[in-house]
Amino acid sequence: MATERSDPSRTDRLVERTESGLEDGRFPIEIINDEDVYQAELRRVFARAWVYLGHISEFEEPGDYARRYIGEDPFIVTRDENGEMHAFLDSCMHRGAQFCTAETGNTSHFRCPYHGWTYKNDGTLQGMPHMNEAYQDLDEEEIQLQEANLATYHGLIFGRIADEGPSLSDYLGDFTWYLDVLFNATEGGLTVVGEPHRWEADYDWKTAADNFSGDSYHVLTTHQASLETKELELGPWEELDDYLEAAYLSCTDSHCAAYYLSEDPETYMGYPEEIEDHIHEDLTPEQRDLFARSVFHFGTIFPNTSYIHGIQSGGWGGPWVCLRKWQPRGCGKTETISWWLVPEEFADDDSFLEDSHSGWNSLSPAGAFESDDLTVWEGISESSGALTHEILESEGNMQQGMGDMTDLTETVDDPVYGPAETTWQGSYFDERNSRMFYQAWCEMMSGAANPEGER
Amino acid sequence: MSTQHSRPAVDPETRHRAESFIYRETDLLDAFELEAWLELLADDFTISVPVRASRDPGSEQDEFSSRSYYLREGVERIRERVGRLQKEYAWSENPRSRVRHVTGNLRILDAEGDELTVSNNQHVFRSYGDKPDHDLLSAQRHTVLRETADGFRIADRTVYLDHTVLNTKNITLPLL
Ligand code: FES
Ligand SMILES: [Fe+2]
Image 1: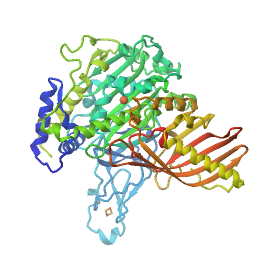
Image 2: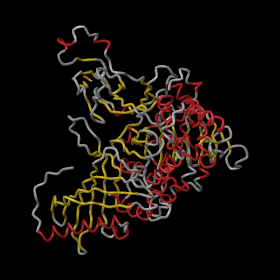
Image 3: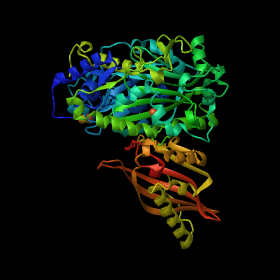
Image 4: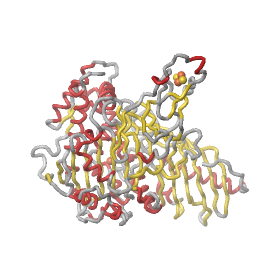
C-alpha cells in the first residue's frame, strides 16, 4: 500500500504477472491490496463492465428510485413517468452538486439544493429559479443528467458507464443457462423483500467475489463452528451422506457457480411442495432437474455480483435467495450489500418468509456463518498490502484441480448439464473458478482490451 | 422506534431493580459470560435488530424495516449461537473483542401486568486484536423484562441501530 509510488506501468506489469502466473495456478498476492491496481480497476473494470444496480421489483411505481453505485460513482436508479428505467449520475449539470438525499424513495423530480435546478425523473431539465431573467439564451435540451447504459436480464438491472462494449446478453453469455435456474425458475420470478443488509469492512471486493465463485473448501475451516450445530433441523442437508460428494463446480468464461445436489429429484432446496406447480415452462428438462435436485447454489457474476440460493447448512434456515453486491469503497475497503429475494409465489406466505429470513439472516453481519468470513477477509486485505509481498514478488496459489493435483475431481456431464465444464467435488478440490475469475479480471485490466489506454 | 410514551406508574423500588438488572446483564455481555447471560433469558425470549434505511424526506415509512433484520431469533438459536461462539474456531471472536457498553438514558417505557419495557441508549466500543483502532456501535435498546419467582427475565429485546451502513465487520451477540 505504498501510496507515494506512482509508476503507471506498474499496474500493467502486475496484470501481466497475474496473466502468466495463472497458467501455473499462481498470482501476485499484492494485487489484493494495492492503490494503483485499485484505481485502475475503477477505470478498466468497473467503468466498462455491466454492474448490478438493482432488481426490477424494487421499482414498481413510476418515480420509485434508489441510490446505487457503479464503481464508486453514485447513481440514482429510477423509473420515469412513462415507465422507463434510468440510472443517472447524482451530480447536477450546473456545478456538480449532489441532489439525492435518501437510499430509496419516490419522486417525480429531483431538485438540486445548490441553486435549485430541477430535473424530471427521466433526467431532462425541468427548470430553474429565475429562468426568464437568467437563462434567456440557454439550450435547455442540451442539459441532461449523465446517464449510464441500462439493460435487464430476468429482473436484474445492470448499468454500464462506457458507451462501447458487449451487450448484456453477450456479457453474460452461456452463463444465463445457470442463471435461468435461479432468476427464471418460477413463473412469477423473484421479488425483493424488505431492505438490504449493508455493512462496510476492510477487505477487497475481489476476495469476496472469488470466494462466492465456488469456494466450498474454506467452509471446512472458516465455518466449522457453525456447521457443528447440534440441535437444529438440517432439512435436505440431512439426506446428503457426504457434503463433498454432493458438490459440483461449473464456470464459463467469466462467471462461476457451485452446486450441492441431492439424489432425490424432489428436493427443491426444501421449498414448499407447491413449488413444482410454479416451475417456469421455459426451463429445459435438464434445468428443471438441476433445480429439483438442488440443496444449495452459489456463484459470482463478474465483477462484483454474487448470489446464494438454497437452504442453510447446519439447520440455520431457508430456503432463500440472497443477491450480493461487493461495493468498492476505496482501496482495501468494501461495502457488502445483501438483498433478500423470494419467488413471487411465496411472497405473502408468512411461515415461508420466516424460515427464509432465518436463512438470509445466517449470512448477515450478525449471522452465524458470515461473521467468521469477514474476520478472515480483513486479515487477507491487511497482509496482502505488505511491502514484503511487493519486494519478494510473492505468488499465491490456485493450483487445485490442475494437472495431477488430485484424483478426486472428475469432469462430469450431469447432473449440472449446462454448457460449461463441470467438475464433481470441484468446489472443494478444484480452483478453476478462482483462476477463471482472475483471468476475466486480467482481460479487463490488460492494455489489449483497453485500446484507449485510459488511466 | 417510538419514544413518545406516557410515563407509566412504577414504584421507585421496581425502577431501581430494573435499572440494576440492565447494568448487570450488560456487564455479562461485556465480559463474554454468555452462559450466565443465557440464564437471564425467558424461555420465549426473542431478539430483533431491524435494518435501518435512509428514506426520502417525505416518506411515511419508518426508517426501521418491518421485514429485514440483521438478527431476529428465538431462544433456541441464541443458545446455539452462544455454543458456537465458545468454539475455538469461531473466528469472529477469536481472539475475543474487547467490548464495553456505555449505557445511558435508562427509562421505563411501559409497565403492564408482570412486564416492564425498559429503554436504554448505548455506545458499544469494540477493539480487536493487536490494533489501535476501534469500532463504535450506537443504538437504543428496548428490553421487555418479565417478573418471575427468580427475579427479572428478559422476554424480548429490540436493538435500534443508529447506522444505515454498519461500520464493523460483524455484530456478534456481546455487541447488542
Ligand atoms: S449545482 Fe445544481 S443548481 Fe447549481
Ligand atoms: Fe464463507
